[in-house]
Every structure is written in structure tokens, then in C-alpha cells.
Amino acid sequence: MMMENGTNNTKTAIAADAVVVGAGPAGLAAAIALGASGCKTVCVGQKFNADPARPDTRTTALLQTSVLFLRNLGVWHRCAEKAAPLTAIRMIDDTGRLLRAPDIEFHSDELGTGPFGHNIINSDLVGALLETAQSVPLLRLIETRSAAITRIAADHVHVETAEGQRIDARLVAAADGRNSGCRDAAGIATKSWAYEQTAMACNFEHTEPHGSCSNEFHRMAGPFTTVPLPGNASSLVWVERPDTASSLMQIGDEEFRERIAERLHGLLGQVTGVGPRASFPLSGLTPAAFARNRVSLVGEAAHVIPPIGAQGLNLGFRDAATLAEHASRAVTAGRDPGSDAALSAYHNARRGDVLTRTIAVDLLNRSLLADAVPLQALRGAGLHLLKRIAPLRRLAMRQGVAPALNLPELMQGQPAGASVSGN
Image 1: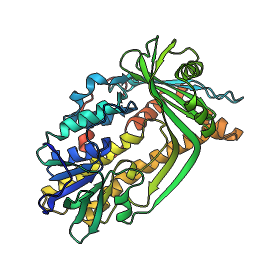
Image 2 (image 1 turned 90 degrees about the vertical axis):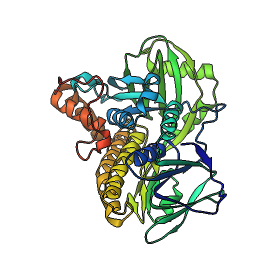
Image 3 (image 1 turned 45 degrees about the horizontal axis):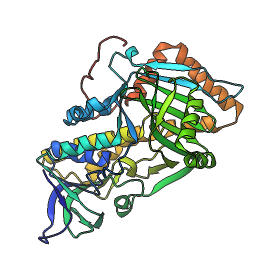
Image 4 (image 1 turned 180 degrees about the vertical axis):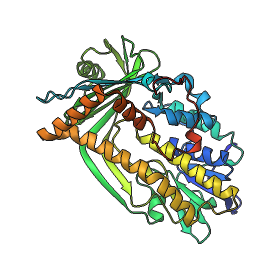
């Protein structure tokens, strides 16, 4: 399937079962899943092909279920060699507080299901998704400056591109980000909040091997997290107070490299090179509903949480897999995939997973910021129990990798490298 521009040459609307608005990783994954599941699908978005002069060097730690999802969609083989496995997570209390939590390590071999996941540069992931999307017969890609819902009718939705092309679909997958226009058009209210924190992200090279281990230094301003990349390289998410982050973003590369080395306390040897930096303020967002008026929310249109525990895009992929499952069932049975019943089923399937992850990440983040001694003691006691009690630790690892219930079929299967041990 070739990409098209959004210019309306025929004045004829395109008819589809579903239209995905947004071409980020979550949007492309939703479009592929919908098309591969038997729904006639259109995906509209900006810049399907990345600008080679401005590559996105940010990374995503794809948890095990997301890797299974990509494998089941035929995407994973296109990016597997560019991803690094994640087999261990080390948590280190670097707060300097009197009540110091114990250091703890989680190892995926305790579960016997292969690595926790894989870390990949976003541009490599998007490239693999796009290449796969172009091969899905029921999926049509339209590149546009922008797209918006212009009317929600009783049995379909009008979506129009900035260039004048109209798509009429029974279901809209709103993957157009945290400031989603599709969500607003559907009348879905949101609750949002901000943290007094800014995250800085970059990739860096080091002299000692990472051993496929992610390191989370828990600091009073927020976490300092490294995640493995292929070779002696790692990605970094460094959370600081906004004024400190602003100062760090303005210093030179050599000084920034030295600051990273200081925070690592020699853990990865010498830091030998640092890539381009990006920064963004931390915030949170939850919607009043995950679907309404023929519009289902996917990715950051449905949830925004701090970059802790690799939950963000993994939640977005679970949105995509769940939506495709419900829409496919409806279309196969001759029912309307955008009906109130179908949207209610999607809302119910996503609500528990998203809200529990949002609350957990929020509490963990605020526990680092809080000065209250009882809260510090509670956090330390919880980590101590995880370190000492193996069944509790394994339960926490399983819940961190995937929800225990309602996992969509596209995320099920036997992970590579899995064994029957560690149960």
C-alpha cells in the first residue's frame, strides 16, 4: 500500500470501517492491527517518513507483551536486530536521605519467560511500523498537514484533511496526542495535572558493558534511568527540577557528559559520548471516558504519565491491540464497530489497566519528591519486602510486564527465550 497525500482530487469521500488519526507509534500500530484484523482502515497523519536531518533518537523500552504484539503483526523482525534485550532492572536509592531504601535487582530469568522487553530507538521502531503498514491490504495511508473530525453522524463520522480529502468511517481511533482534537470533538473531558519536574532524554556510550540491565537511580528530584541499547550504549531519562534541567540543557556536551558520569557513580565505566538531548515537562492526563460518540482514544490521547517504569507507549500498544480485537469482532459479526455497545466494551477493557498504571506511577514519582518521613519509611519497607520475599517479587515483576487480566489476543503467545522455570 503506497502512501498518498491528503489532497482531494475526486471530491469523493473514502468509506472505511475505521480511520486512525495520528501516525505516531501508537497510531501506526492501531492502524496495522485494525487492517490486519479485517477492518477496512485509513490512517491519516503528518510526516510518515522521518526527516533524516532531524532523526528521533529517543528510545522506547518495549515490554514483553508489546514485543509479542509487534511479532504477531509482522513488525518485530524488521526491528529486532536494532533493539537491545532487557533482562534485569536495578533500583538504587540515591536520595541521600536518612531512611534509605534498600537497593534491589529484578531478573527476568526468575519468571522463565524471556527478557522483560527490548529497548529500541523510536525512529527505528516507526520505520518498521511504516514498512509493515504499507504491506497491509486493508490499510490506506494518507499524509496530511492535519486532520479533524468535522461531523459525527448517527452511523458514521466525517474526518477531513487540511487538503480537503474526506473520510467517512464508522469508528475513529484518536491517536492524535495529548492535545487531541478528536477527543474534544467527541465531547470527552479530561483531568490533567503537572509535576514540578522536567525530563531530559539522550543516548550515550560507555566503556563497560551494561549486561542487558536497566539502572534506576532514585533521587529526590526524580529518577535517573539508563536502559540498554545495542553495544556499549544506553538511553537515558534524567528527571530534575525545572530550573536545574534548564541549566543542564544549556551546558556543553563535554560538561553534560561529566554530569552523567557523576550520577552513574562509575557503574558503566567511563562515559565516552553523548548524543542529542531533548527535554519535556512532566505531566499527567486521564479522560472521563476512553471512548464515546464513535471515537476511541489511543496512546497519549487516552493517558499521559511520567516516563517511569516504561508504561507510556506500552499502554498505547495495549490500547491498539484491544481496539482492534473489539472492532474485528464487531465487523466479523456484521455489527457496527463504532456502536455504543462496542465503545462501552473498549472503555471497560482499558479503564482498569490505564488507571492502575497511572496511579502506581504517580505514587512512585511522588514518593521520591515527598519529604514526609512516614512515606519514605513505607517506600523503603515495600522495597525491602520485594527484595526478601521471592513470590512477592515475582508477582510484582509479572504485573509490571503485563496486566494479569484482559490481555488482548494480539499480545498473547510464547515469548522468545521463554522456559518453564521460575514459576
